[in-house]
Image 1 (spheres, rainbow, N blue to C red):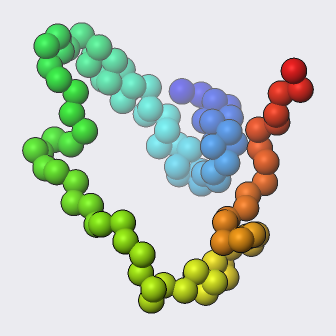
Image 2 (cartoon, helix red, strand yellow; image 1 turned 120 degrees about the vertical axis):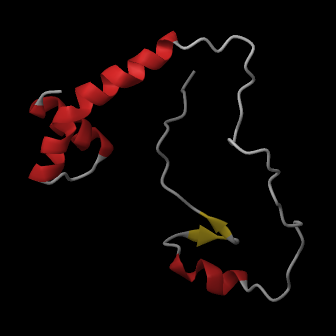
Length: 96
């Protein structure tokens, strides 16, 4: 992978890379070549899995907790209204 491509991807991902990190991405093509070999692995009849171990997700019950003070929790949020977190609109609505 060329340096200009690495810098382009870093810019799109909005990350800053050191010279050492940029150099380490030069070996990306070797890694990518190895991963492409996985395309040849037969997986017919193999069920996809979310986790390599057969485990169930431990979930807590969704219950009201009067000890939680929403006002104090939301003090770190920049914009809230009626206990809802507000965020800037990033997707423009269609004018059809």
